[in-house]
Image 1 (cartoon, rainbow, N blue to C red):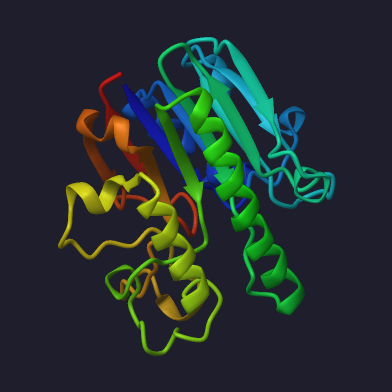
Image 2: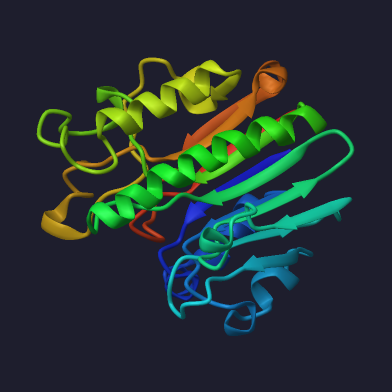
Length: 254
């Protein structure tokens, strides 16, 4: 089963850059978007109709901000919109699809780059997600989590670890949280398959960072330990920029 995850930094912008052609070529079973910055009625239906997908959007109340969406082919048994906190749910950050043999969770974690208030909100979201993931795992042990986590885990996942040591996204407390999450029986599938590979998923638009490959790996596919043996492949699509993030391509046997 094939999955794509992409922070599109505006889904309409990604469409202008060739998103539909990319999906047409890959033919995934599921497509997970973060930072859509749009409501469903602002996106051409051809994006999902052509490939036989059904869309589900969780958009932010604030226009042109945040938002997640999932395109799926097989109807889920249950869909949960939001993570269960009114503050974060109005920002459009979580869609959870439940099937008989697995669940898919698409998330857009907050960024803390704009200051202390948002950094505090980010840490609160991490704590909330940790608790909610433990709760959901008791019901369904086979969970796939994907999205923009806004944290680079280790020095291997960022182009300038020393220079970014005090920047949101690579703070010690964020990295410690991610280590703790993984130690609770979750698998970073890219690092599991590519333990020594230096690869990034996001580059700032400034100073030609992408051309110089000065990036961060902040987008992930996590699976519960129970699914680890089923993971087949995980790659980062770099051929054509569709956003300041690169799409993640993930395949697993389910």
